[in-house]
Length: 170
Image (cartoon, rainbow, N blue to C red; front, side, top):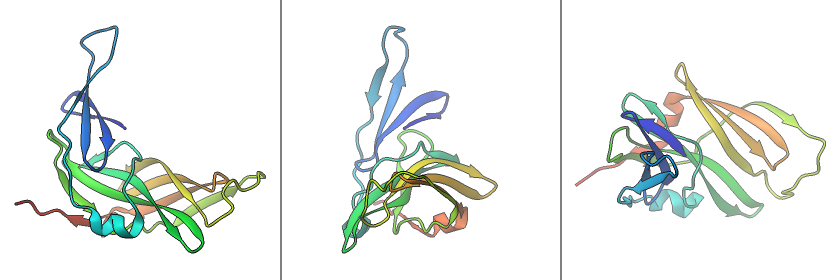
């Protein structure tokens, strides 16, 4: 996911190992990417319960911290379930991971719209996280359910922070 910092263009390549790419546009005939050294951080408590954190949306900067929304998938008796989760990293190179997900986001669906199409995923509701915005202390997240319905969750920033666990560094 592309994002800007310090007047340069970067891409968040992987959540863990945390990998950031820097885009170089000095050659007009091609885009060159320089990859940072991937940083592995312990997310085993979260991933053992809800699955490995995967990609999602471009990060959003708030007060010098980038918040990155991703997703994970896990199996239940009713089938596969997808949940959203955030992690956070410093908004300046080397973009050190600051906080990890302790739990998935607790979303409240603001609006839903069904389509006349048959469900593509007949098992348990499956959510796909799409774009995110941050405005006036609230996160606005759009997502899809079963490739069938659109939904918007509005989550107060404090609720999001309650799902994060700050990392300690030695």
